[in-house]
Length: 128
Image 1 (cartoon, rainbow, N blue to C red):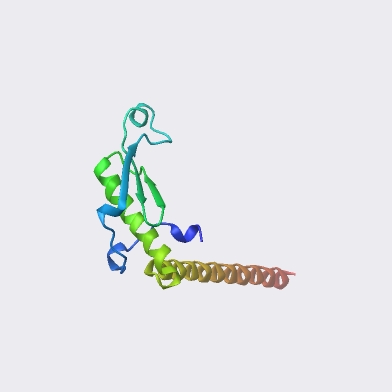
Image 2 (cartoon, rainbow, N blue to C red):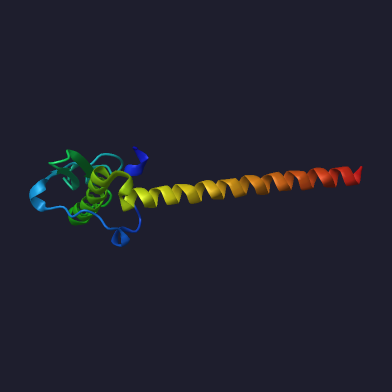
């Protein structure tokens, strides 16, 4: 269930478990990746751990520590919700619905491609 742990898009519409600050351990570390001196000299990457479940989130999406703290908490909240509720979690249901839509879109695209191929073949036969 690795990809299911990715962040969801509509956080406010989800009924997620609440996290208390007492259950969290927070660290600020140097981020990795591109950015050169700006990345190498600042500790703006947030590592957030939910102690009871052992889930760890690392967030370095922006240069702002405060924004990274907020994003890390949102991601952690979704992961903890998924961890405890499993398939009953809104995050899980939203991810499954998204996957289903994606598969349907691929199926329609394949059907359209087949129709185009058949149409071209028919045109070739008509010319001959």
